[in-house]
Length: 56
Image (cartoon, rainbow, N blue to C red; front, side, top):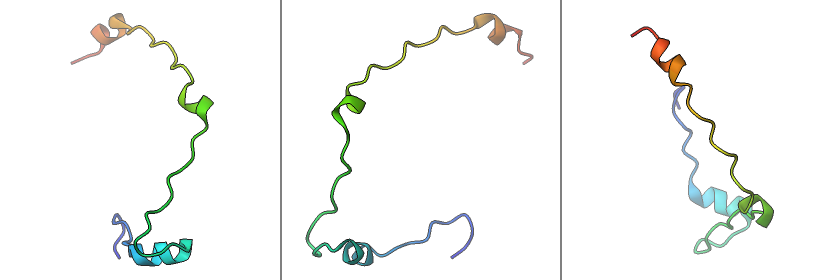
C-alpha cells in the first residue's frame, strides 16, 4: 500500500463484517424525505465586474 492509493478492501470481507450473504447486495443508505425535497438556495448573480478586473 502506497500513500495516495486507496487501500483495496475485498468485498467479501466487507459483506462478512456486515453479516450479509455473499449474494446479498449491501443496504442502501436511508435518506429522510425532507432532506430530499428541501428547496435549493437561489443562485447568486455573478460579479462580472470582479471577473473583468482580474489580471489575465
